[in-house]
Length: 414
Ligand SMILES: Cc1cc2nc3c(=O)[nH]c(=O)nc-3n(C[C@H](O)[C@H](O)[C@H](O)COP(=O)(O)OP(=O)(O)OC[C@H]3O[C@@H](n4cnc5c(N)ncnc54)[C@H](O)[C@@H]3O)c2cc1C
View 1: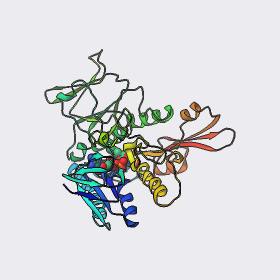
View 2 (view 1 turned 90 degrees about the vertical axis):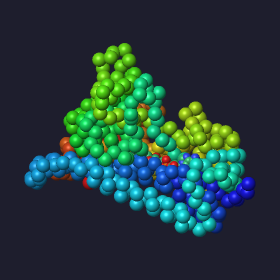
View 3 (view 1 turned 180 degrees about the vertical axis):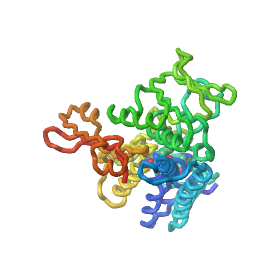
View 4 (view 1 turned 135 degrees about the vertical axis):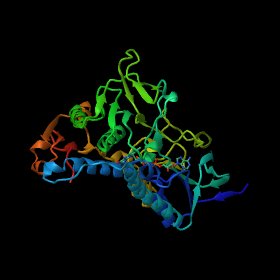
């Protein structure tokens, strides 16, 4: 069979691949772009964009219920889940089409819709065709982790991907996992009208954050009547009639929750297990993340890994920043390193959490002498005026140099 020769092959059209394909194509390179499923990847189709449209619908429902507090008289509030989903599909679909059209419109680029697998360090097979290039960029992202929970194979469950097809209101949604994805879905479904229980293995929600931040989020969610069950060290599942029972403690059968639906939100796994990495000689760590250096080069010369699959970030902007780093080093002769990246992200509960730099705990672990400043939103005039006084702002400063090391704001938007 004939091998099709390119200057560069890009596997995956998440948040790094398309921008890189465009830059490479601008320089006159012949580029192959391979996508196995939805153009735009997780963020566009099953992550950021659809979830944030759902968060917006949930916020509208919540504010409508609170209308009287602002002197606005509204009628009874109900949520039409079919219309909520249709709005989400429309917005997310537009981005998905946009990425596909963008890729198909690039000069000298060929788009392949199929699953890519390495055959060697320089060749990739897709839809039976063999493609060859001296530069290969892996941007394959990740998917929801399905943990080896006893009984899980006996019950139906949802993930962030299958949640995208839900156009009805679950009577009682049990969410396994009390971190970023679980909390966003939890609050939004509670606001749509479901009963929601969040089951978390650890002693507190979003354990990566400082304790005061996790406590503030816990209180905010509990005030909205979301049930939170922490310390669920041994989580099991079984079916009883049309109910799904989630057990929280293998040694104590009385600790359990019964619901109508279960959503798994316990982490992500990289899509590297079915990529033929062994044939290319590309190394991964024990969790399957592709090992890269500070310029996102793998151990095989001519192969880079960008985005969630390299384990250096788990956000849209970190994946896009990976593109910027690779493009800068490769095309602009301006050295950039992933080590210079400052942590920054948001959790889109309401109020949202914005985080940048070090947490208080990070700074202490690094032995820094720090000053910590906090201000509850109940003492911020703008928040009082807006009627959104939940949460706090917090800043971590180096006690000697006064350098700002990190900040968190669990605060009203707008
Ligand atoms: C529910 C949820 C909400 C999120 N919300 C936010 C948010 O609000 N803000 C934020 O910054 N981040 C958010 N994220 C994270 C964000 O979506 C990811 O960090 C981002 O999409 C990672 O982009 P990526 O380029 O690494 O890969 P992805 O976007 O995952 O894209 C990888 C692409 O590669 C394709 N692919 C995989 N294997 C192959 C193969 N063998 N051959 C061909 N194609 C292949 C996949 O089909 C996919 O299209 C969220 C994630 C989830 C799950």
